[in-house]
Image (cartoon, rainbow, N blue to C red):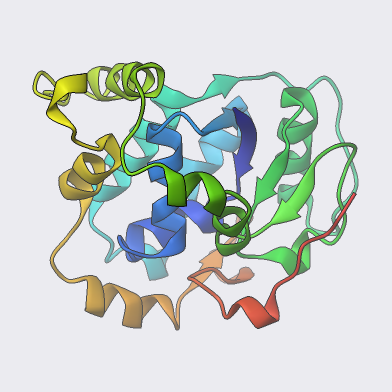
Amino acid sequence: MIRVVLDTSVLVSAVISPQGPNAQLFDLITAGKAMPCLSDVLLDEYHRVFSCRHLQHLDPSRITQLRDLLEAASVRVQPRHRLEISSHDDDNRVYECAEAAGADYIVTENTKHFKQPHGKTQIVNARQLLKLLAPWQEKAQCFGFGTMSYGLRIFQALGIDASDFGVGTGQCLAQHLRTAIARPDDAEADAVAGRQHVGRGDGAGQTAGHFADEDPARSHIVAV
């Protein structure tokens, strides 16, 4: 299972656009194909980012569900020292989490702030990670027993009734997750996503760049 650290831009984009590529990353997490890694500082940022004024309109229940999913599925790490890789200090906390976890990828929609890899950790956006895992996605119409068990543990931690998700049902856990957290106004969310920015740092006016499903031509993979 690959280990990933999700920048706040991924979480915010997933809240705004339930059918977009960032939301699809949560399918991979539920399927047991990606293990999110968290530090206490990064978890605090997952909470703090939604206090920004320009994000106050977002559905609080969806925010809670996605954030709780990350907490339930994650491996918690404690960075041992501070890094100074990015010129944006908050982004260095993401690098520190990735280093402590031995993460394979930092996933972000703000690749301009994550300009270089660190150790084994590569920088990708959501579309790029989904493309890297596409061979598995094409083959797997539904998840195997081991993956199903992993997903069930996540649902149980979230307090979702998963009693009918047994192996014999032939149901994909990711679809149930999407159904559980999706909102009917996806088109509106996608429109909002195109013009929103994430505030980072202590000031709500500080901009972290476009976070919602950017044109892949504007993004790049930083190879090790």
